[in-house]
Length: 509
Image 1: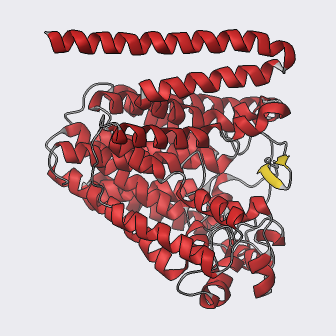
Image 2: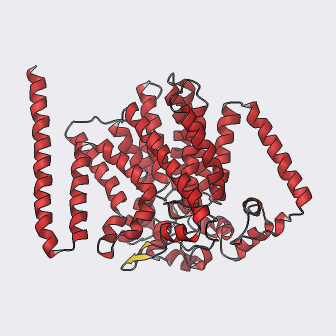
Image 3: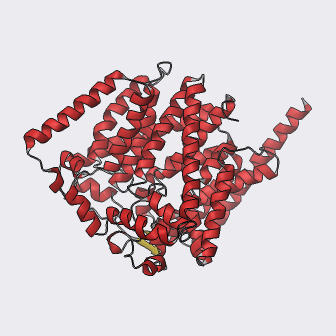
């Protein structure tokens, strides 16, 4: 009884201390708004509130981050210039804050050290990145920004693993994200009907910079209004890949007969999401979803209905090509193309040639293999030097100039639209193998949890995440999706959640 009373008093004092801190900050903000801009003061108050919340309830902050990210591209559109830099990096700073909270709780003995299946590989990967930066004389600022670009969302895996969220928390998180998907579906359908009016309202078209660093490039709408929907995520491919990730978890949940709660809602959401996914015009999302869905339904579940459906679909596609007279090899990406043309254009020889000679993705697949990797085979050219978001934001042309190559896609953008090859070019073959090894190990562990778990929800989540990992693996060949805020954080958090659930059942040591 004494211990319980002492614990209650300690908790009560902690809550009162937090209330005093917030009250003091509010008073300072009131007087500060007289001197500084109200938006800056509001940002400071909000930042302090998040700081307090992260120390008191870190899992709440983690959930807040994941709920916020799908809306971030749209919300940033309305942020004034004086606080844009802070708002732009709010989500990333929150990740570092959560890392600091976890470290503090470990040092103070509130949580114990936990072994992760990828601990050693992650440390080795970091050492390779550091060694590559030193060997290639990458400026320290560039090296730090480049390493941060690669590992920032990977840190969420370890944060989630150490916070050990409850199963109830995991379900609330997942179901809320399903609700966000539902909202994006509704918004996407509205874009089709309202066209330019809604597109202009949602599209974050303005580029923002801080000195020589490009904070946001802005989105250029090269497609017809109302054609490629993007919701609040800023681009059609970001909406598509975000939807595909959670649609695969939905598919897996529906294959578990013991999960009956919300089942009719899950079916309804999936049925609505499929045509909306098509309307994103994101082939990366389409093919990723199909790959993950076939893995779940055919390879794992052996569903003969899906096998027959695939056979019928192939027959329909071949029949359409036979009667329509469509010449696939001559298709080209134009603003007003149909969904069918968009699908077949992915297999167009004319498009592949255009991508190569136009310095697009195909050009960089070839040049990475024959020029970039051989010139620094083992340890790469260093962080922030080739193909990724960091080199694009910094405008670092040194490696491109040395190798006699144009500066990324179209010769101007820095990135190469292929995250795997970007990693290969920057971290070399050693770093590339280490990264892929981490990815494969987590994928196999998800499957192991699926096969051995006795809990329906755990099984469904593990299989859904495994399918989603296959989708993201494909996505990363088509853009820098391992760095994108609207997809990568969910990859690492949900793989960690599967590991957490597997450890509770003693499936994973």
